[in-house]
Amino acid sequence: MKLLSKKSTIYFDPQIHKALRLKAAETDSSVSDIVNEAIRIVFAEDAEDIAAFAERAHEPNLSFEEVLKDLKRRGKI
Image: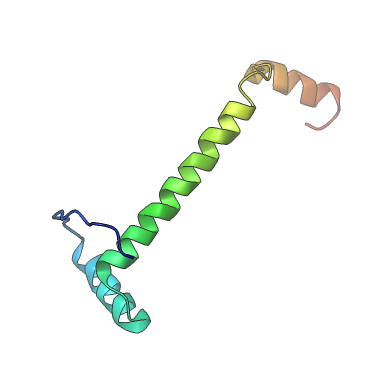
């Protein structure tokens, strides 16, 4: 079952458009299918980043100077 689609006009760089058309032909997909999948991947990565930030929200903040001092103290720099 295919979900209802919304139409949008998108302007591509000519070389990107050519690559999309070639990829669509090679994979027996539409340009729309390829673009939709790419956007889904980007949004999934964004969701992972947001989750990682939320998990670390209560960690202490260290200044750059504190990190440098610690690295020097431990002989790392």
